Length: 253
Image (cartoon, rainbow, N blue to C red):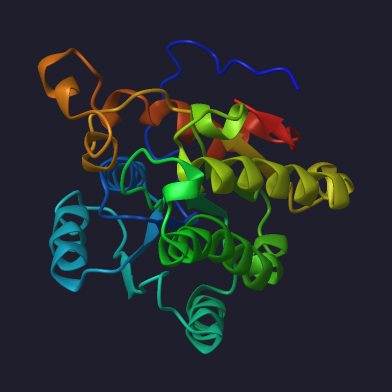
C-alpha cells in the first residue's frame, strides 16, 4: 500500500472543530495531550481517556483554560479494563452527547526493544490488550455514535513497526502491524459509509519520531538530538480528523 501525504503546511481554521465531539485515548501522553489541547482550542469537546486520574485532572484544567467547551474525563486502564467498563464508556458517551465525531487511538504500550523469544508472555498479553484489543473494542462499541455524526473520522496512530516487520520490536511491533490491518479491514467492510451521510472513515497515521516519554524508553539518547515535539505534527492529525479528509478511508498517512 502506498503512503499518502498530508498537505504540507496545513493549518486548521479557528473554531473548525466547534460542535465536534472527539475521543482521545492515551490522552495524557505526549501526543495525546498535544492533540487534546489543540482540539480544545479549535472548539472541540474532547473526551479524555487515560489511566491516571491526577494526570487527567491536570489536563482537564489545561483544556478548560483554553476557553473551549467543557471536556470529559474517563479514567480507564486498558491493561485491566473489563468488557463492562468499555460498554459503560460507550453508553455514557451516547447518553451525554448522542454522537461521536472522531476517535484518536493514541494509547500505546511499549517497554523496551526485545527479541520475541525473550519476551515474557505476560508482556505479550498486556501489549495486545492496550495496542489492539482496546482500539478494536472502543471502535466497535462506538460505531452507532460515529454513524450518528455527519463527518466521523477514526485515526489509528502507528509508526515504522506498523508499516514493515522489524527485529527486536517485540509485541509492540506485532500489534502495530495488526492494528494497521484491522483498520484497513474496517475501511474495506464499511467502505460505502465514507461517502455516506456520516462520512465514516478509518485511516492510520505515522507522525514520525517525536520527543515523548514512550519513545524515550527505546531511544534515550535522542534527548540530545533535535527530535520534534508532538505539537509540531498535530496539524497533520487535525487534517485527518477534520472535513478535509472526508471520503478518504483505508489509507496510510
